[in-house]
Length: 332
Image (cartoon, rainbow, N blue to C red; front, top):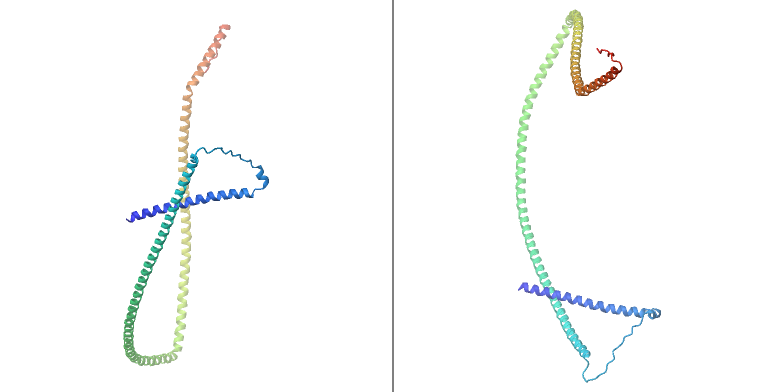
């Protein structure tokens, strides 16, 4: 059912579009005619004279019967058909216009219904939102009451704990003050004993001061004599150490020089040996290449020798023809 209604609406929309196109075409034709008339009306007299005139020859006819001619009858039939078609077109336009108006009203009504439903839905959403906000506010107030109650309990508990800590601190301070008093008494006794001992030591030092001065002088001389003897021994030991160090340095220097000379000599011997090996290999390669070249050119040399011998023999034969007793020199 819904599909058929949609197809009918699509069909009506297509007919409406065709009707609009046909109307546009007719309007375009009318505008073209109007433009042509305006162009001819606006033309000047000179331009109109230049336009060639068309001679229309109308056929002459005479009425021979009481009936209208055939073409007149055809024109009347065509006029009737055009009038009928015009009525059909007007009826179709009216139907299309009514259908368009009906569809427009249905669309407006549907839009109103949708807007009303949307408005109701929005009102429901707002009501639900307001209910949720009221519920959240109620829960917030309840939580605030619980929080305040717990806060008061926490404050009371904190005050109680603070009072207990104050009394405990007061008791600890009392015990510490007692301990400090005992320590102060003990320290006062030790201070008196220390001052007494210091004064007694100073008194004894004043009595024995000349003896202490003599003993210190004697001890200073003894230390000076011991120090001088130790310094002399250290100087002798330093001299011996210097000589030993110089001898050791000369020995190490000679040893290092010999070691480096030995290394350099060995290195040079190895380099010479390596160079000799390279030279021997190069000489062998050169010898092999030379003999290979000699062997390769042996055939040509032999041919040259044979050609030379042939040439000599021919020359000797010619000489012998002239000088039969000619003896060629012996080649060593």
